[in-house]
Amino acid sequence: MNILLTGFEPFGGEVINPSWEVARSLHGQIIAGATVHARCLPTSFSGAPVALTDALAVVRPLLVVAMGQASGRSEVSFERVAVNLIDARIADNAGDRLQDVPVRPGAPDGYFTTLPVKAMRDALRAAGYPAGLSLSAGAFVCNQVFYELQHRLAGSTVRSGFIHLPALPEQAARTQPSVPSMGLAAQVDAVRLALAVALTADARQAVGPDEGAPVS
Ligand code: PCA
Image 1 (cartoon, protein in one colour):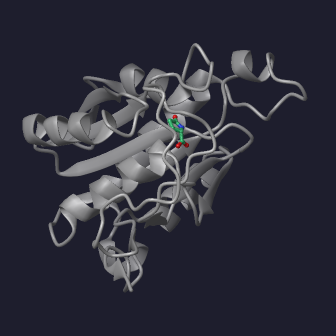
Image 2 (spheres, helix red, strand yellow; image 1 turned 30 degrees about the horizontal axis):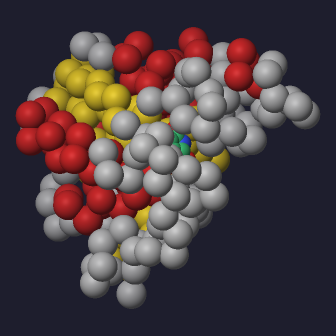
């Protein structure tokens, strides 16, 4: 039983990305009987889907959680909807700045997460971590990967979704004005707990009737 846990390489002039730091910290750990396989995705529109395809084929996971950095957010945020839109504000790490194009031409407008996001959020809050739900992963590479993930796994029994993480304290110290941050150890503990809940939560109780279906 395998969990695929992805993070991204640093982007936008940063030298570190909390999502990869958290993923690699959990690599090899066994959570609720499943082994975590961490993968680092390139922060580029051309590279990320290729790396995701490769990781899915090699790991053959029963749970996939993709993660990215969302500077400015103070909570671990569980994304609910992946949208079929790319509209980049900055260039990706390959220098591409795609705007107003679909992730997949002709595919559904969006997909809901298939993770039990409310149960995950509630478990984190009960353990004292800041956590919330989010209705948009943006329109950059994180949303592209979230959309690709949900599209590929639509109709399967594999639960999948996306978590955005706050900046690390060392990143916040370099921004003006300072963005909210969360320490690496706390981020790692929070994601470990979220993965355990994702594997064990009762699907009927935790996932709404429309979760996983295409957005029409
Ligand atoms: N965050 C960006 C892309 C990579 C990352 O960690 C995003 O939110 O799209």
